[in-house]
Length: 263
Image 1: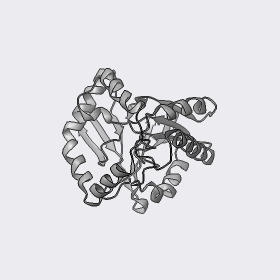
Image 2: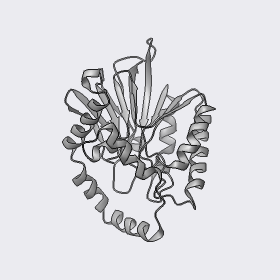
Image 3: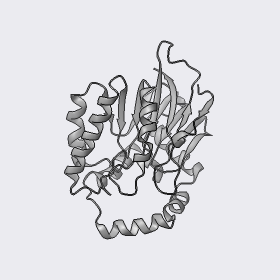
């Protein structure tokens, strides 16, 4: 069960406190963050890192819920260089929080062949890191990136959709400048608002969840997802509450959630 809200004004981080105490057997405090889009020049994630570290330090588990890194829009010279930088960033994060268990759920922007080739051996030798291709279930809570909300997707649809990102290349200077201009005009905000109506998004998520056997009938009561870059704070539909961190991009809201799960 989800309990009351505690909202902290600093760094615009939202803390959600569950009814279970982390001191009870099986109960774990979990923080969630997504869509940092590190290495993309339009990301403002650096402004939030101090606040993020404070929340992670006070959590048993941390879910990195996809698009933490951005290979399509990386400012580094190559995708391989970006993958090495991503692993270095993760290594520093995990070294700073050795007592927190991290779970990485891939998004579309970090579902790149170079990153996949790097994160698997890194996780194998790192005790406090695990990773998932599509979703993570902890107790009554489901974590997934959310690109299944582009349309009504099954697991097979998502696999086909991700294949295009797996072998993708980085965008060039001209396209980046076009996107910079769109962001300056706040057209990205309008595009996300039109593409991802709240009710349509959660219905698409539920469709996918049922396909993979992780719907309300399987005991899922809360879903944390990303991708749409639009903050959701407990929107309820179909007996499930939905949460989205938004994104640290110009003109958009960004939050980080904490909850408690009984594992």
